[in-house]
Image (cartoon, rainbow, N blue to C red; front, side, top):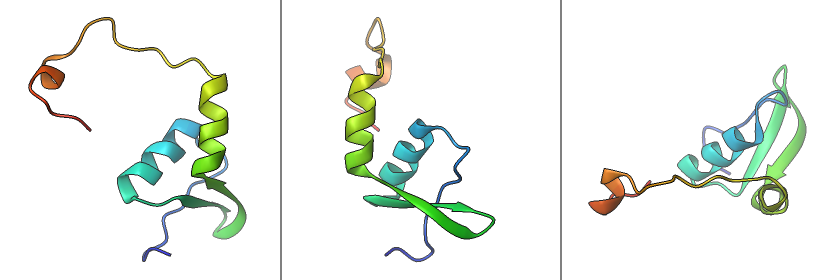
Length: 71
């Protein structure tokens, strides 16, 4: 487990969970409410969620992509 523990609140959107997991290099994200654990989101959960939801791509490539900078 990472220290400090990276968590998310139940009211936060799914994309925030994905971003938080990616930015912190974690595969499991505890869901907490009032400092108490109430669940967990995993990379598998995200993999099942995102294909069912529409993800739109940019109509044109942005300049930073042409220069090879990716996030």
